[in-house]
Image 1 (cartoon, one colour):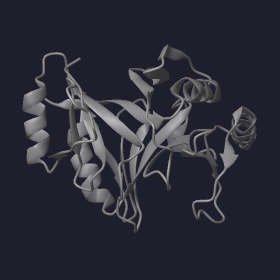
Image 2 (cartoon, one colour; image 1 turned 60 degrees about the horizontal axis):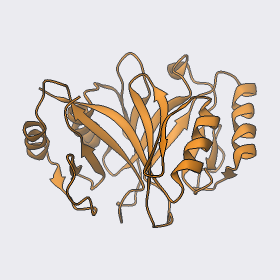
Image 3 (cartoon, rainbow, N blue to C red; image 1 turned 90 degrees about the vertical axis):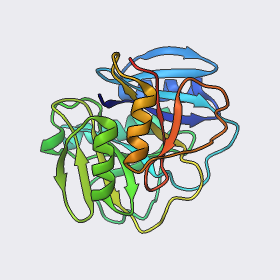
Length: 236
């Protein structure tokens, strides 16, 4: 038995408005919309799930989306569309780089990448990127959570992916995590799996249970070895 990566979850003070922003930017659809949750299609079987919180964003997110482009013209078009929809340019210390760093209307950073061969035909989201003190160790742990193999490792970056869908990438940073992440990942056992078994397996691999105020819910909230929260959902 194992788990697989299902969704990217983003905290929001206005999920409906933020969901419509992301659906328009990605040129995809809002799958479900209510005051309590907005689901935006990202890739086959994966969604951007936007949920309400009272707290405003503070500081740089440790998890962000990278958007793909197939040409310099498309990169410029995506940037222009994002700005028109309410995004702003953001400085996270990137200096002179070929990608463009923006922030959505609630301040969540994302990058619009220059064309890269590995992201050709991947869809609007090239990768979900996670800050890491130890990218190699984090990738090894997350291979067991996401069901994705590690396909690329360098000193400063490690990447997971199968044949389709966004990459999951861990990029080295110097700063440790502080506070609850505003963007996190969800994973779930397959339909014939068992949540208790999978949670125990992930705890043995280094995950710990955490309380983010979830109360009585059918899923289990864990944190990876560097403290990044994630949810293990019921089998599906």
